[in-house]
Image (tube, rainbow, N blue to C red; front, side, top):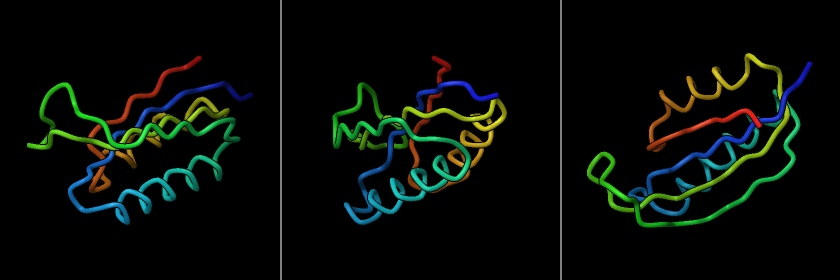
Length: 93
């Protein structure tokens, strides 16, 4: 039984565009491997409302996908231990 989710990831831009692209690909592959991606909304570089790890800008990507109920916790765990991920938020639609 799958459910629909939306995960918002904010990546650090201090390491450059190649690092952001690598992170985007990593999470795109992880979600595709464990579920079905419906849409990827790439907002790009935006100013943050407040400093996160002394950074004023972040790269926003929104993933809409269907997955098993235990996958969002695994996605957040992987994002939490991945360098370059400033924030992640997942909601069930």
